Length: 127
Image 1 (spheres, rainbow, N blue to C red):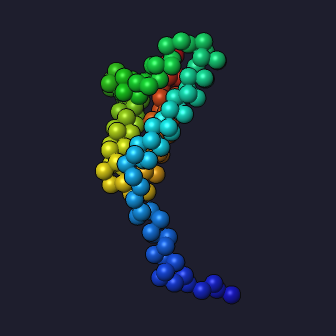
Image 2 (image 1 turned 90 degrees about the horizontal axis):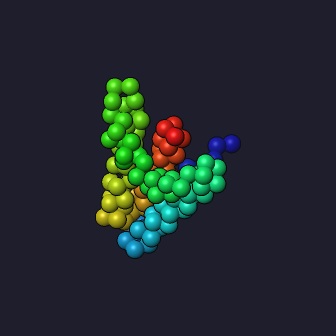
Image 3 (image 1 turned 30 degrees about the vertical axis):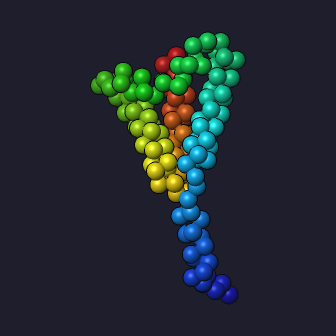
């Protein structure tokens, strides 16, 4: 038996979830909290396993710094990845604050996770 097609009301409700707006304050607070939680995880990891004191502050800028330093012929993919992650984080944060749509906020949260993943990867590769 084939299930019936959803009506236009159900279709509109699904699309309506991503088109609703949030306030700028809640968007920036949520993104800041998400970024801070990843930073806290990073501090805990580098301080407990590697005894690396500068890691707490260094991990904040690792993708940007290595992005510029690694644009050499041998390791350019690391540099491009770091700069791309940094650009996505900045651009999507601004876009989500301007548009205030849920889809933009979701992309901004994904970019926060991408930024910290690249930060962990770059630091683990070069330490």
